[in-house]
Length: 533
Image 1 (cartoon, helix red, strand yellow):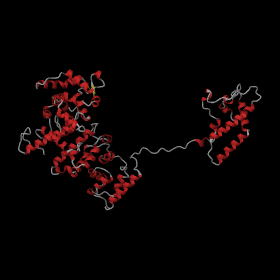
Image 2: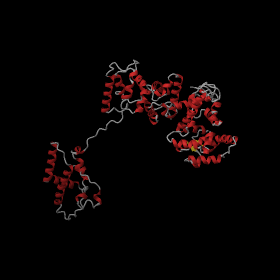
Image 3: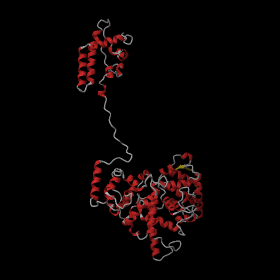
Image 4: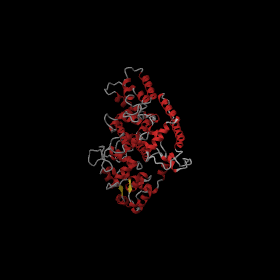
C-alpha cells in the first residue's frame, strides 16, 4: 500500500482513540499487512481472481461485506495490550459522523470497476434534413398500391390518368394532380413512370411528410422557401376545369380568371400574416387552407366551402367593386370608395387608406386602387373581428406610428363622425362619453396611460365596435340601436364570421337586383350598366 493512500483510512472507523494514523503512516502499513495475512483475506482475493479469469459477474456488495467482516475480526486482536479498553459499538444510523457516505479504498482502486459501469447507449437519430424516413409498413403499403396502379401502364401514366395516383396513393386533393404531375415530369415528357414516381414520392421523403408540408413542397418553385400568388394559379385552373360546382363558368373564361384571382387574394389575406406576399411553411401550417382544400375536393357544392373557395363570396366582392368602378377601368379612386356602403366611411379614414398606410397598393396608377387592393379592403371592412382586419385598421388609426392608439388619435377620427351626426339631426354623443365607452369595452392593460395597443384589441371581442364608432357611421348607429335583426342573425349562426353573414346578405340582395335587371328594370344600378355576369 502506498503512503499517499493513507488518508483514505478513517481513524474514526477504526475506533482507535489517541492513535494518529496521519502522524504515523507505519501503523497503516502494519494494519494492511496484517489484514493480508488473514486466511479470510487470502480466500477472498483468490475468489476474485478466479471469477475474473472465468468472466463470472462479480458481486461487489458481497465482496465489500466480506472485507468488512475480515477487518472487524482482525482489528481488536492487534490492540489488546494497548492499555485502553475498546469503545462500545456505535450504531451508524444514530451518529452524525456516519451520516456521510464513506467510500472504501478498495471500491475506488479496484480493477473490477469497469464491470460495474453501464455500457453507453446509442441515442437514436431524431433530426433528418429531408424529413424522417417512412415507417416500414407505410412504405410497403405505398409500394403495393403503386405497383397495382401502374401494372396496366408499363410505359407510365399520362396527366389525365394520374389523378387516381394523386388521390389514392398520395392522399392529396385531386385538383393538385396536374401540379404534382409536372413536378415529377421535370423533362416534360408527358408521362410519369413508376420509377419516377417512387423516386420523387418515396425516395424524396415526401411520403412521411404531413399534408401541409407535402402541398407546400409541391407548389413552391425550386430553390424558393415560400409560396407566391403565381404558385396557386395552376391549382385554381385545375379546380375550375374539374369541379362540378364551377362547371357553369367554363363558357366565361374572363370570370374564371376573376374567380381564381379572388380566391388567391383571400388566401393571402388570411394566411400570409407577415404581409410579405410570400407564404411560408409555418404560415401554411397555422392556417386553415389545407382543410379547406380537402373540403373542396369532397364537396360538390362549391358555395358550402365558405373559406376561400365560395363562388357566392367571390360574386359579392366582384359586384361591389363593379358598382364603385363607374368607368370600368378596373381602378377606383377616393371618390369612388367614399360611396361604399351608402357613404358609410368618413373622408379621413379614406385618406388614410389611400395614403397606403395599412397596405401598399398593387395599382401602378397614382391615387387609384386596384381590384386586389379593394379585395383586401372589403375583407377588412366587413369582418373587423379578424386579426388581419384589426391590424389593417389599427395602422390607419395610429397616426404617429408609435404602436399605440391615443385619445387624441381617436378624437381626430371621431370629430368627423360627430359632425355627420349633427348634419343628419342625430343626437350627438360627446367624445368624452365615447372614450369611456371604448375603454370599458377594450379594458386595455395600460389603462392609466390612456392608450390602446394592438394586443388589447386582439384580446377583446368588442374591438370591431371601436373602429365602427370612429369612422363608419352606419355601423355605429346600428351598434347604438342594437339592431335586433343582426343580433338574431348572430345567435342563429354563431359559427359564422362577420364576413360570412355579410356575404350571405349581400348575395341575396345582388341576386334580387340581378333578377330585376333581367326583367327589364334598369333603375337598380346608379346608371344603366350591364351586369358583370
